[in-house]
Length: 166
Image (cartoon, rainbow, N blue to C red; front, side, top):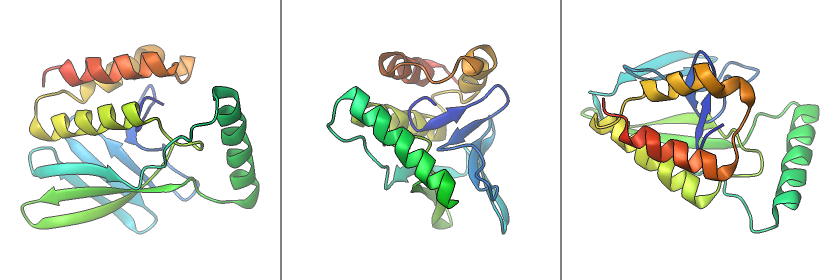
């Protein structure tokens, strides 16, 4: 996980990878694809005017150990109860108007404010065509198996990806 994105060796997602029922928002070099039990919808970066993630769960102020413990307990309870991760809304603006898509949070304990801001900026750059979403895939193929980087590394990655020209 890097910011609001889940990056694997094969794919990158806004929020979590596919849930148990298959729901996710996948990013490609061409655009976004929302998949849910009722089917899928896709938008190219060119047809999008904006893409903003709303209702992002934020990390509280407790210390790192408390946050980690809280995230683990929250994830374990959710898994035991068969609950999906917390929902976020991806608000998309196209020429035809606004559309909302459900994305699931990958961070059970919430996201840090700086990572959220950097992620929103990166998503806006993808829409504007000033950053290349393929940068996430390159990193994923080389590093995703290592797990989630530390916060400072995640922030540096988001800044680096924002500079990757389309």
